[in-house]
Every structure is written in C-alpha cells, then in structure tokens.
Amino acid sequence: MYQTFRHFPPPPTPLQSPAMPALPLAARLRPASLTDFVGQTPLVGPGGVLRRLVDARTLHSLVLWGPPGCGKTTLIRLLATETGIPLVEFSAVTSGIAEVRQVIAEARARLEAGEGQTAVFIDELHRFNKAQQDAFLPHVEQGTIILLGATTENPYFSINAALRSRLKIYQLQALTPDDLSLILDRALATLGTDHAAISLDSDARQLLLDLAGGDARFVLGALEVACTIAPDHAITATVIEQVLQQRQLLYDKTGDQHYDTISAFIKSIRGSDVDAALHYLARMLEAGEDPAFIARRLVIAASEDIGLANAMGLVVANACRDAVEHLGMPEAHYPLAQATVYLAASPKSNTAGSALHAARKAVQQGPVPPVPLHLRNAPVPQMAREHGMSVGYRYPHDSPTGWLPQQYLPDGVTNLPYYRPKPIGEERDIAAWLKHLKTPPSGS
Image (cartoon, rainbow, N blue to C red; front, side):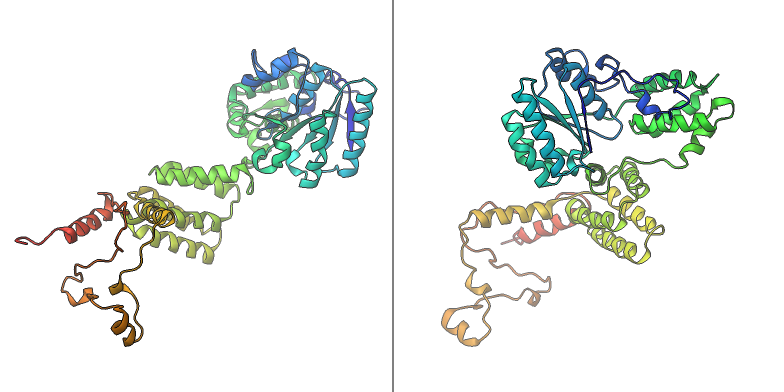
C-alpha cells in the first residue's frame, strides 16, 4: 500500500534484460537529478524556491498543484533524494487510515532514534477524505513528518483549511512546447538504443506537440506505441494519428478545467468575442460536458451581461435551453452554437442587475421608509375611509400615454437613480423614454 525510499537509484538503463519486462518509456526517462528535470524553471531553476531548498538540504511540508504530466511526482521524489530525507510514498486511491497510523508510528520511531524527520508523499492528495487528511494534521504540526502532496485539483477547495494552512502550495504549469520537444529528443535517444534507425518526421513531431496539452506522459505514451507500429520505425504524422485516434482533452467535468473553461466561455461572450466563445464551447462539447449545464449558463449570461441592451437575448437563451432538453446530443449543438453567437454578438448591458444591487444595498443599509398611503392595498372600503389607504392613487391607464405623474418612492429614499441605462441597443430607446417622462411639458 505504501513504499519507503531512502535514496532513489538512477533510472533503469534503456536496454532491458530479456528476463525483465520493459518499463514504460515515461518511467525509464524519469530524471536522476534536479539538473535533468525539464520545465518549471521558476521553481527549480537558478534561484527558484525549490532549488534553494535542495541547496540547503532541507524540506518543509508542501503541495505541488498542477495538470497531469507536468512532473509533480518526479519533482517530489527528486526533492527527497537530493535533500537525503527518507521518503514514504502513499497513494490516496489505495491507502487508508490504518496505513497512515503505521507510517506515523514508524516516522516517530525514526525521529526518536535520532534519524531525523520522514517525508511522507501522498499522490492525488485531494482523494483523501476529511478524516484521512485530519489524521496527518497533528503530526505535521508537531514536526513528526514532512508532508509532501501532489494534486491536479485546486488545493484551496480540495484540502481541509486546517491542513492547508500548514502546507506551502506551489503551482506547476503545463509543460511548454520547448519543454516537450526536449523530452521528445531524450525519448528518441532512448528508443534508438532499442530500435535501429528510429525517426520522427517534423510533421509527426509538431502533431504530438500540438495535441499534448503540456502533458509529457501523453507525448511519451503516444511515441512509444508509434515506435512499435511504425513501418521500419519511421514515425510519420499518419502513424501518430493512428495511435491517437482522437485527441484526449485536458478536462475534468467536476474540477478546475470545468470551472476555468466555463469561466472563459462566459467572459468571451461578455467581451463580444464570438470566435473565442465558440472555441470554448467546442472544447466543452468535445470533452463531454453536459449540454444542459452550458445552456443554463447561457440563460444567466443573457440576463446578467446582455440584459436590456437586447432583451431578446433572454428569449433566445431560454429557447436554447428548451431545445437542448428536447433534442439531446449531438443535435443540441446547433441551438448551443446559435445562442452562443447571438449573445456574444449582442450589445452588452448589466444595468438591470446593477440597479437591483444598488436598491438592495440601500434597503440593507436603511432606513426603509413606509410605503406611501396612496400606494397601499385597501381590500375593503373601510380601510380607505379610516386610514387613507389607496386614496389619491392615479391609474396610469386613464391617460392616453399610459403614464401619469405621481409619487411612487417613499419619502427619504436617497442614492438615486438606481437604474442608469446605457445609450446602446434597446436601452437607448428605454433611456429616451424615461428622459421623456421626466421632462416637464412645454409651457409648464
């Protein structure tokens, strides 16, 4: 369930013994030192904080947060190796409280024997539940262990606040094309010792880099299979396409990618960038996002961001939501595309929401004056006679224009007006009408 490492040996030699199964290429290429590590230069390059920890031969409890294939596990192992600190590895998928207690007991024994602290590495830390995370808390606080975690999920949501406050969070980035190209060169050199005259043409290389999404494991896995099936070990773009069949997008329908992509989608609509909005819509649909979720967000955007500048936006968005519900995929992508383009191309106004926010703020801060008597409900005539309720109310439809001047706001209301229409789209007409109502008749 867990393994203890005091030192990590160098990576296996490229040639495997006939009696031993070949390790995956990604495992064979794991760097033996921090100098050989590719990527994350701000953290591990000269002057980087993790590099300084290694130079000082010390470690503190930390979490590496980043996308798949960016080097989190490799980097943590290298930190332990180069600082000389014993490392115990956990998998949050297969380990439980019993294993946690055993590791803590062994770490305490080593500490009491004068052998120093033990580093405990939990891969996929976000998969540990609250009770499992809490089990580490006192031992991190007391210094019994150095907790090292790796996660693809946002630790500000996936790790308990109490434990998170005792960990330093370092965010790793997806590898750049230059990083992946360097890894590709190393992989080709390694595979070249196994297969004579292996080659990767420029189109195949570019295709791999384009589809990788910053994931070194993706590149190495595809390359390894391609090398096996390529005629004469000559890897072309056609071979890569055969291996991949379909690009696997970096997307988690309940994690950071889900929220980041829908955020970019809505902000692109708000910014009237039709192409960007369609790009993020395509990413979500290709990754299998729930189309009903996208449709609901379009309804929100229609009211929050388009608003009264184009009131039809809400009608279109609601029609899209209904169509998605009745059609299902794949046909539902048509109304989703139509609504996305319509909303992104519409003039934008948030004045309705801003007006309500201003009104609610005024009500919350008070005072809240009583409703004027002439606007109050008087369901029986006695209330009007004895208390003046509804007395003096002027019915707007008695006027040919549908409007009559009278007081609606209570006395003492300040910070007006709440609603400030923009001079764009349909709101231009609304603004003109409201201005007309407030303009005294000529000759008055």
